[in-house]
Amino acid sequence: SLAANLPDTLAWQGELNADLQLELPQAGPNGEISVNAGPGVLRFREEDIWHDFPYQTLALNSRLRPERIDSRVHFVGGELGELDVQLRIDPQGEIKPIDGEFSLRDLDISVARPFVPQVDRLQGQLNGAGRLSGTLQSPQLNGDLRLSEAEISGSELPVSFERLQVDIGIEGQQLRIDGNWRSGEQGQGRLNGTLDWQQALDLDLHLAGTRLPVVVEPYAELEVEPDLHLVLADERLAVSGRIKVPRGDITVRELPPSTVKVSEDTVIVGEEAEQADTALAIGMDIDVEVGEDRLRFSGFGLTADLAGYLHIGDNLDARGELKLNNGRYRAYGQRLTIRRAQLLFTGVLTQPFLDIEAIRRIPEDDVVAGLRITGSAEQPRIQVFAEPAMSQEQALSYLVLGRALGADSGDSNLLANAALSLGLAGSASFTGDLANRLGIDDFQLDTEGSGANTSVVASGRLTERLTLRYGVGVFEPANTVALRYRLTRRIFLEAASGLASSLDLFYRRNF
Image 1 (cartoon, rainbow, N blue to C red):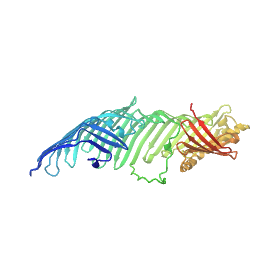
Image 2: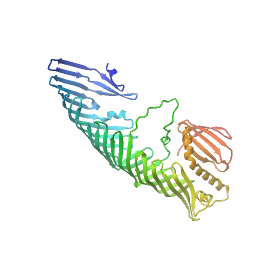
Image 3: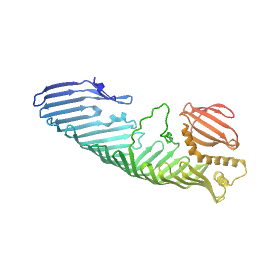
Image 4: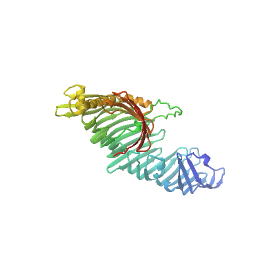
């Protein structure tokens, strides 16, 4: 019968009983009130799923006298713990002073697990006690809470919190926080600070750690040592301090779909625009030190050790330099040595400037041939060079074939493919932008075939299962359009149309 007055996300199953004995003389009320609502079940809704929390006792007992009201609330809820509050109120006058005490025992924080989908494991117990003071309109709470033997971990969380201990001191409308945790075999973390909500939400928190394992699936396994200061005031979060990433492994096999973002001004016909929330302003003043020990990178044919320093400011403005040491790069069937590789940051973090040289030594001819990559990461310039200086054709021949340019057609075809790939690399940013506007994901430009059958091929995903491929002949006027549909994880159906049309069934097996 009370359901209409409860929030949509809360339901209460049980019976409510009460006894009332009350006298109302001119001097003030005199009597007793007893309310019993247990046992019962509290139900909380998370999206479309209801979660039940049975309890044994929920009772309120009050003794009313003209000069004083004594009340006690007692709750026993199994995993929800046991709460006992005793309160004394002076009903005389306007401010109505209060005085009392509370105790909380054995609250299992695992009851919150269904409401935190990113967390796979949540456990720990919360206990505490304190006093109540102030007035009925402005109560004050003072006491101590302790979270002990807690664990918070999940596949979507980069850091796990093991053996978490947090002491919380409550002082009116402010919290003092002091905690520590373990992570992995050697990782240790500490946090301390204050949280104030008297006027607006104010946070002052210091977070530090050593050898904390950070996992970013499926790309990185790192050890991180943060020393950060977080301040939230006037609806602005300021983050300052230092982060060290001395060691770890980064392996990138393919870019995630999130790297292709829809423009903020995109309008999807048929969908109502959502009201944008007011974004929290974030100020940053962070020094990042990378590769003090060894941070290994592997991806896109490159293996190297990352080392360097960055300063990250507001709006992800980055200043600094990262180097690739002991690097090797695979291109055109060759394993090139990274002679020099620098990523220079003088603006937005995602747009560094490149200064890279990957070389191949040919000792027989005392020649060094290589690729020089310069410019911004969005539109790099790729140049073939050689030492001693020679024509671009000869330099490319030494790079791809390991010898001077020959007269046979096999060399020419191979070099033509390499030259085409270099040209396509320079236009990848523009063509990728165009594909995104057309709704094509994971767009790629590449070459296929050899000799007279060489073609430039554009490919990308239309849906999760359907991909499109379009090829244009370089030396022959032959165009091919193909649609491939993924039936299962290993079986594909492809329809192609060109000089000849075909319908093929493919089975793929990785070894």
